[in-house]
Length: 289
Length: 219
Image (cartoon, rainbow over all chains, first blue to last red; front, top):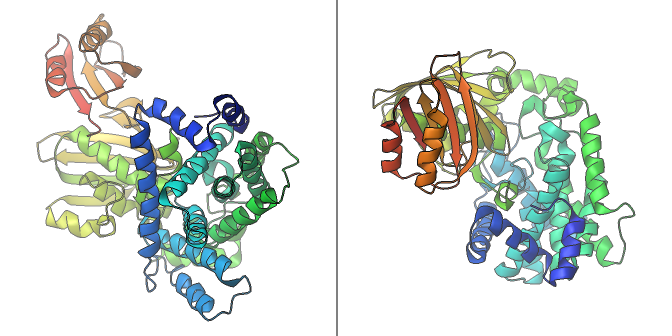
């Protein structure tokens, strides 16, 4: 796996290959598999995301009773034309909520990079594909871009809320999605890196403070902010903006911020929203179930 | 780490550490027993005990012990599955001391008559670590074909085993040695780059000084 986005940017120039192919080839060596096998495996990951999106059950509640059925609310409001963000962003919101709820209800999802952040990439990818008509092969290439960015983040920082707070989960997912969508819209490795960096910068410092320690409140809704932030970060790069702080340094900053976070906002369910009077009351009710 | 650790696994929610990791601990424990499980006593420590119910850690671990993969749609119904398979199980709280917060101790009796006591933890992203087998400290992730070899604590055991594997053209990715006390049984944990054929496992067991060989296949 690559240690920096800069390494991938350099490799793109030296090998004259796209970002996705560079990370795929590198991984084929690590896993000792053919490019065809790797591509098909990744394509399958995207197919499962689409299956999970379709498999949402709009009457299901989680075991704790904290989440469920909100995906349907967004769907109905979108169909009724009530959403300020309009239909495109409305579909992104709807899918992110649905996937987060499916996860909480023990349905099948793709951890991307984690289960708690599993709604970000599918919400962005499936809706963008729907809108722009990309092929599944192009979407699979974008999946490799996302995974490549995630690999660099994992190397330089972390992908677990317990290690670095929610910025490491939703922040990383958002960063991965931003770079991937930039790729689909013609960005080179540098553009991909800057989209990823902007998305991460916007979520730096985000606490991981789940009520009762469950992947429900506020995790499900944070998938929405990760997804929408990915799209707006991508658009800034497509408009010609860059991250004033170089992308790899942004990931290093995420690590430093995560390290400095107190333990009560690193997935222990003891700080932030989890420690509010209502959060504590919810926890007590759930543990007595 | 590889790209499919970043995007993936395909899993039943809600938590890679508390659900998928628990399934994988069950999977590896089942393989270490080597058959279907007859009786499982499951002791949850720390965060597994505190938030396990809401994460379905109990259901996930049970499903794993029955050999279900992390994306098996039957995981939420694993209690009923266990009843169908006449597998007895119980969940208990435990304090294992200064260990990873997501730790569990498993006391298992296999249908093959083998008794195993395993301590494991879920270290994030669905990855796990087996930390103790039958009272001996070990450390391996169960993500490579792994040989767990219990041997007499006498000179030449490591050389004997590694030479044998080399002759079979099996490359070693990582290797660890453990023993509880000088002169008592020792344990070698060998993570291999490829699967070890059944006859090779059998032949290892026949080597002088080897007490028992447990093989964890990824198949």
